[in-house]
Image (cartoon, rainbow, N blue to C red):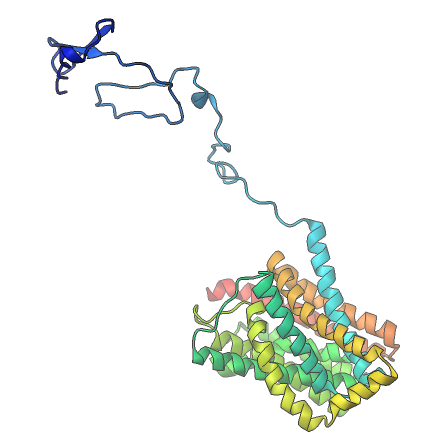
Amino acid sequence: MAAITPLPSSHLLMKQTHLTMISLSSPATFHPIVRLPRRKRHHFLRFTPPSSSPFVLKVAEGDALSRSPPPWPMSLDSDQGRPPKMKAPTRLFTFGLIASWYSSNIGVLLLNKYLLSNYGFKYPIFLTMCHMTACSLFSYVAIAWLKVVPMQTIRSRVQFLKISTLSFIFCISVVFGNISLRYLPVSFNQAIGATTPFFTAIFAYLMTFKREAWLTYVALIPVVTGVIIASGGEPSFHLFGFIICVAATAARALKTVLQGILLSSEGEKLNSMNLLLYMAPMAVVFLLPATLVMEENVVGITLALARDDVKIIWYLLFNSALAYFVNLTNFLVTKHTSALTLQVLGNAKGAVAVVVSILIFRNPVSVTGMLGYSLTVIGVIFYGEAKKRSKPQQS
């Protein structure tokens, strides 16, 4: 270490005490050091020089820093040695989400049936346009103002055209589904809707040449067989309603497959809430001319109905709000539960809707029809299990 040069004597005070320090590099040399007035020491930081340094500063054994425990247990266990994680949503919160999801799904289905069949409001395209208008407004409020999810933007014209295509198919599936409710009971409508996996597998094979395991296709046999049995035993069977309902189910499956194809790249993927934010206004643009042409003077007729019974306005407003909450609660349940739980809940939801609709509308059912529907649900469950088992083999 370099020797320290003594200060000039003119700078030294007579009464100051001189200390000496031995230089380790030159032990025979003595150097006077002036002792400066002590300053208040602050032990905010602890510094330990490398072992090669001639001076080593140590914190006293009684120092609070050396005795303070670490902020969390230092252990090699997976659950320890890390900062504490946030608590998972409580069971009560999850149960509330599931109850809201069931209520909104079944509620909008039954209210659609009541308006289009029992009440006599025979304008399914206009009703769907009301749904899409509400979804547009509520989606913007939820994402732009309430920040339920981060807003994702459309990055290119190609992506815009892809979303427009999905929106058009989405319109067809919803409108056809609402039309079928005019002619078919909810129970039979749900039985046909349960065949969505069958059409999804067909479109996936035709459009992507994706083959599933043979067990997956075998599981689809009871799905289709159950609907055939239910159709033969349905007392309220209506051919046109049946065809329209099958078309709605196929369109729903086509939209699912196309969404996986068109929005497959990382830069184009949108979560369900942002996808609804862009699809709903496009759907309104598609549905507005359709309702004006195909449902002539629907606005005037609705206003005339409102003069006689103002409840029709409240029915439409409440029904449209429920249509949005179906999508919101579906997103939240998907976020807070596992894929298996969601699959089980989805299958049970259809069965609950059937039971509730029979209790409310008192539509006649046959043992054959219920057996057919039960067979379809069992087939859907087997299909989900087969898909789950085939994934590890494909990967």
